[in-house]
Image (cartoon, rainbow, N blue to C red; front, side, top):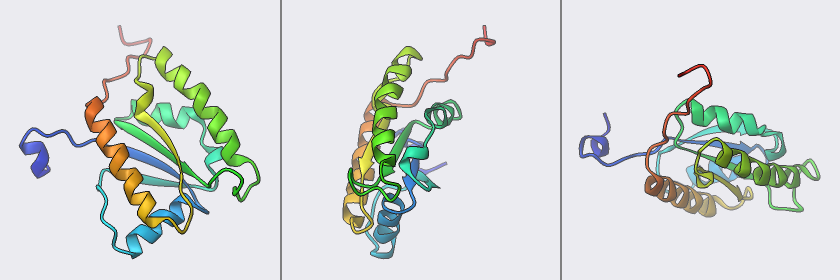
Length: 147
């Protein structure tokens, strides 16, 4: 058990789907620059934010994540031309789906971080961690066969 959990303070588990070319490189820069940020995020590197299937997000929440962050290149700077625009459109649809499933849409965030923005990456993680702490732990999603 973590020390904070022993004191009763909720520490969220956050899954981060980060674009290989920008957001992941920004996370790497934050690490090599020794910029401190909360250790709550578990990073999954994807080639492009446009490759993040909304079901990956729902699955992460079903499997115990309290929040999900999707990070990509800034609009107009995608290495795959329009992948980040696709990701942004999918996020809009995903937020509606999450509401239908009874999940707070604010548990899922999207950000644009370039490879040169290590400090911004750390700030984003701090913000996302703070926001998820306010929401509290993720409630278990009931499946149709669980009556």
